[in-house]
Length: 95
Image 1 (cartoon, rainbow, N blue to C red):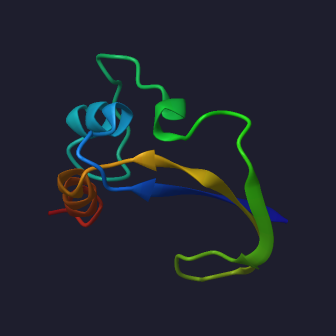
Image 2 (cartoon, one colour; image 1 turned 30 degrees about the vertical axis):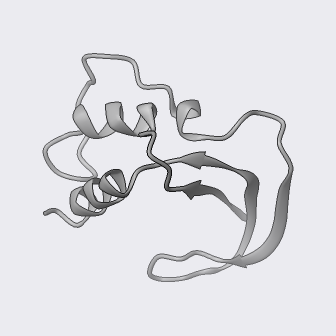
């Protein structure tokens, strides 16, 4: 089967440094691949290692929404600002 991962994000005043770097050096279009001039650590998007999580069976949240996916959602949260939410949404929508 397939596995999905989820991270809950809160919206405090402190930006997420990992997301800021990823957005700054992202390719011009979503889903393109280009080398980054700086290393971007995906772990910086996650809460602390070793935290509790929940697991449940479900489906993908993108079309075709296939079932048979085991989801793992971390209970600890990481931070993101409202501006970063909008920047990320704009980037992935091509805006």
